[in-house]
Image 1 (spheres, helix red, strand yellow):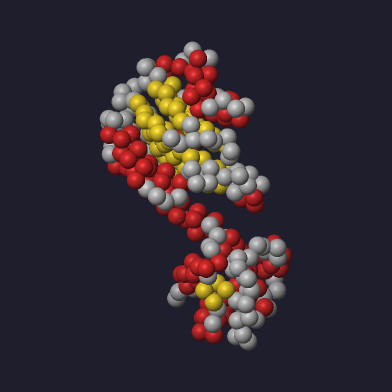
Image 2 (tube, rainbow, N blue to C red; image 1 turned 120 degrees about the vertical axis):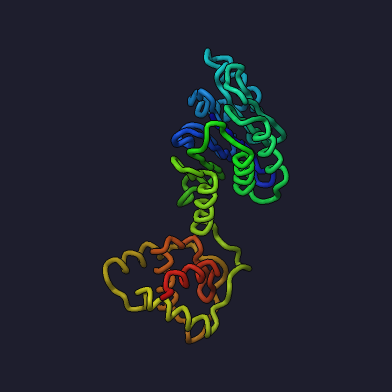
Length: 308
């Protein structure tokens, strides 16, 4: 009742799972991952303990194949289970029990396991495999490309309902305290895979940090536009209500991208502070540039927020 892809990025060790199904909230059951350890998809008549138990076995030093064997041998219901595992070294394994409903099966390669059950046919897994292998983008992009390819090849024979993306990276979770870099779910939707992609694009806007070379210098013309738009947005310097004060306090220690530059008399510290405060309210604080610089994505959002 599900098709999934589990993979590792050989360039940086990121690990992730993407999954879709005619099943409510598939992201609450199938995907499991831990940075530096491995990633697992447990599905069909899913044994959810395969997730935490499998990660514990991987962390103890067992590879993907050994963990699949360990989990299934201890499970009386193994004939109805399906799972895919990729370990932190890029080892991979996919297991489809003989009792899984047709069409069911999977494919593996280094750092990659693709599997599905109750699919329209093997073309779903083949399309996912090919799409992932053909992409040279980031791991999240490749996972989503594969999921969309499987969906458009027919996907779950029963229809569509939910999809999820989980990607882990050490210290990349919100606030840097967990490894849960990307954790997005579409629980109930008529076309969940494109909807998942839409959510990912929003996540990218709000969570990714630009490179210093992507920033634009605030010159007099840009400074004038920023002052006008911030004023229209209600965030000109001098706003002293309790909410504004709390926002400024919360953002006082925000990490800024690049090295500060003097933008001249048209853009002083008060306007810089007003911009940072507005960005915090808009959830764009991850894109805070050093004084005198601006992320073009922030400018685009400010323009959109202040159009007549």
